[in-house]
Length: 270
Image 1: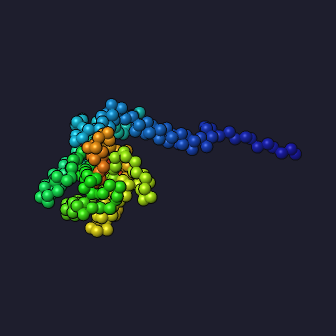
Image 2: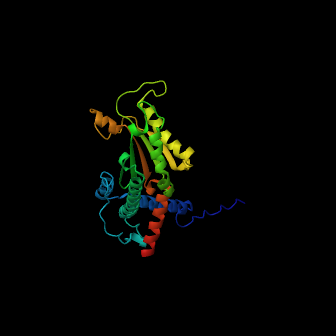
């Protein structure tokens, strides 16, 4: 007898692999919608934020609070306005830091007046740092990077207040005028300016037990002048060492902590 052929069973609906494929496509769609919502930063607002760095002391004008979430199709809540949150968070950071840096600058100025070094140090501040500027002639002999006795006296006078602000990082910068130098020890102004910045940093680290993780040293050569190099007076101003007490938010760990705190406050208002 001939064998009976088994009937072919046709399953209803789409193939089983379509379920997995559909899930994957849906997830990808959600992912790109998320990226798109995060990327829509208002150009005018962002430019206003960037412009705040151009001036000296100043801060952004206040803006409206973060708007309520909007609903997308299917009841999925859209993210709050990322650009507004970004601007308000950064405004909060720099407003707080500006007040703290202002207090530090005022305390340092008072301390310098009390110790008799106010005429030898220029001090100013902005949202990014408090800056102390020491004239080259007071600190170093021409073409040298060894600290003069008068320089050590000035640095010594600054130890107490600088240790008080031990949670702030310090950046030492060396600068020269544009007259070239070519010696066996310092082939260019890069070398000379770097050596002078390092001399100041090492004094605080080795002589005064400052945390080396807290201090950095950079040499800028003649490439960051504050006056014209066409006159002797201008060149004298350009030959300087600057000490910058840096804004906390320049430390990424502190910035991340502040952002997390701000997100928590926003969540608490909902």
